[in-house]
Length: 56
Image (tube, rainbow, N blue to C red; front, side, top):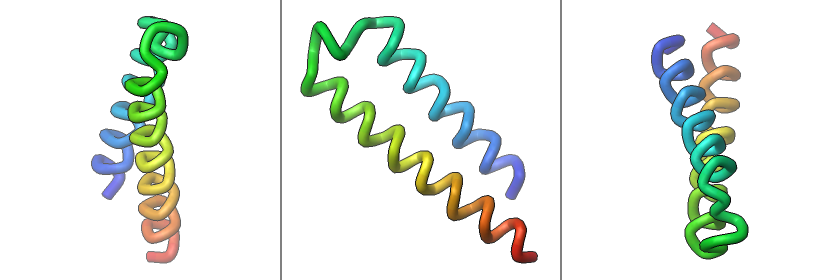
């Protein structure tokens, strides 16, 4: 379970870095909002998995 959480966190950091480094907010707002929605979904998944992992 820890491996999956770590993998999701790495993916989240990669997407955030990609949005910031390529200036997507200024260049392509539609693509940036899609990427940000993916980031928020990853954050939600990480939070749920961490809660389930702590309950065990």
